[in-house]
Length: 149
Image 1 (tube, rainbow, N blue to C red):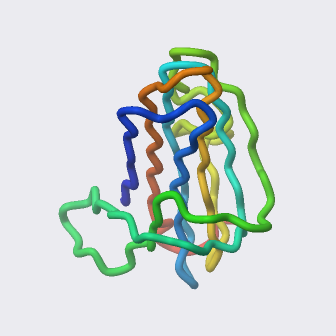
Image 2: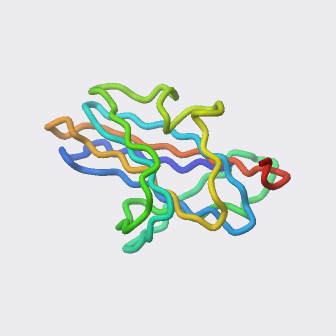
């Protein structure tokens, strides 16, 4: 299991947090997420974006029984081009998604099975009209036996 997180203590109005990651070839990852903002925000899940101007971001191994081989590569606040918006959700002011939106959670319908060798990005945009604290968290786990169909 892999965790990619970022908290912005002061995200400007119209500011964004983008956490992007690359699913390795021959890997099948399941993704859940959690997001929050101190005011109104939007959250988008973007699949297949071209990523440039990227700075590598830490990916944490949540399974302490295995090594870090096979970890996805992640980036914080890259430039995105193209890609398909798979989810575009509103986040009411001062709320977090409580694992209940189409972007987060741990049950079917709230969990995405990612395509191998594909980039994904979760983008939160602060629409509060003021600077607010915000966070984005992505959790991934590898399907142990390949595609389940």
